[in-house]
Image 1 (cartoon, one colour):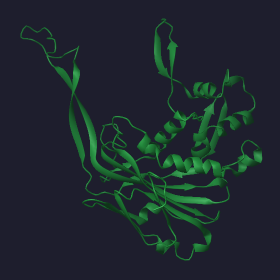
Image 2 (tube, helix red, strand yellow):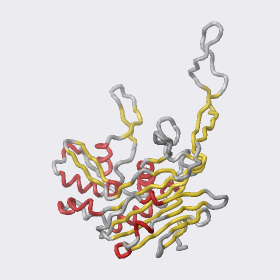
Image 3 (cartoon, helix red, strand yellow):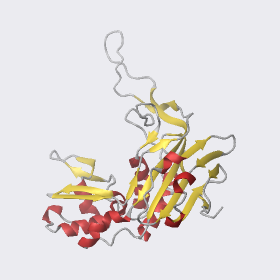
Length: 318
């Protein structure tokens, strides 16, 4: 792949929780700005690839394990166990050829895109990913968390309440739970695709490098994985925007989310894109600019010419 790609990916969260912190509330910075981590965006992509039968290394998988007491428990695999399971290796410790491990790692689609830190069985391998994400900040200023009380169908079997004689009483009602969501949030993630990240590994003969096919797989999945990843907290999260700027291999652009704004409308929202000032004069180094969005819900206000617009749902040109 003889080009770089700069872009922005947008996710809407309507009465959902795109990325919670350990308190259950949507993640915020110290000054109160709501954001989503890069891991929050990568995980649905990895989950989608895994469901499609691709080799995904860095994803939680479970196994049944019998302990010393003979009890069988459901536990997560370790990184070593996941590697052995994924690549049909009996014991990683028996492998004395690091190049073999490197080749296997590059055959995992998540490693090929996002890189890896693999410190197992006396091997210390670091692969910087060709695809790098920034943090996805919410551009909608009126975001507010909502806390919902949920009634469980079961009572607490270990109540703390005591009767008048000091004995514990059985709970007479089912327990309450809490679900926390954002009423509405719109996250915008900057990213860059740099195929040169693997040049040294190409010289070592352990990978063919980051290819156009790799990029197309990343692009397609990045535009649908948030919508496809339906869980209790993520239902209501959808891919709503994608900006892809393909450039010559030696053009370097800043974080593009700084030039994007969001405005809430009564019927349609508006995404403002002001890139003319930084891209002016660079036309000869830019190969193509594509914007993906839902024209039913969103209006794009872009100051660039020659942009190709596509429906993010149907992929048809608008």
